[in-house]
Every structure is written in C-alpha cells, then in structure tokens.
Image (cartoon, rainbow, N blue to C red; front, side, top):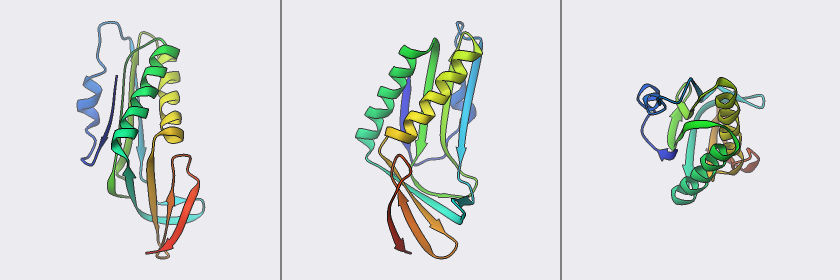
Length: 146
C-alpha cells in the first residue's frame, strides 16, 4: 500500500503493474483529470500545493483503512502537485482484490477520503483572470485576482 505526492506526471501503466498479485482477480483504476470548468466557471489551469509530510501520512492512513475495510490485495494513490493544464492527470488510485466488488468499493473509498482529508490545496485559474483556492473538501478559502 503506497500513497505518494509528486510533481512529475503519473505513469498509469507502470503503477498498474504494481497491483498485480497472484491473489488478485480484479484491478480497478481511477484517473482524475484537470477539466476546463468548475461550478459554472471556465478554468484554464490549476496549481496544486501540499504539505507533503502530512499529506503522505494521511494518505497512507487512508490506504490502511481501505485495507482493513475491504478485502483488497494492493492499493496505491498518487497525487500531483505544481502547475497542471487542462487534460493533465492530477490523481490516480489503483486497487487490486480477489473480486471486483471489493476493488470498486475500496477505490471509491480511497478517492473520496483523499479529497476530504488530505491537505492538498487547489488554486483554480479562471478564464476571466481571477483565481480561487480550494482546500481539501473543495470549499473556497480565498478569491483573488491573478
């Protein structure tokens, strides 16, 4: 089980190989991409920041919880930080399990908890020149001009 914060692009193919296990009969992956809109506003790019030591500790805790709650074999999550453009992969979760139900359930649990609890902040840059910071539960915490 591994949680990682990184500035480099996420290599889904390489990470997915880490889910392989003789006990696993299913593998589920989730990809979260940067989209061009949020709450009715046109988004042109995002900047992610994290307090890496705390983010990694909380991410590891979430993976451990998933392992305890669901019958999974392996789980990984990687979240990007830095400047990302529309279409970039921002977060990836991969889970393997003996059966698909546990893999689906654990994958959803992991991404939902990461979005709620891990201290990663997103600064959305809008087409109108404004930007807005969102904290882990996606509540705006600051609105400012670019």
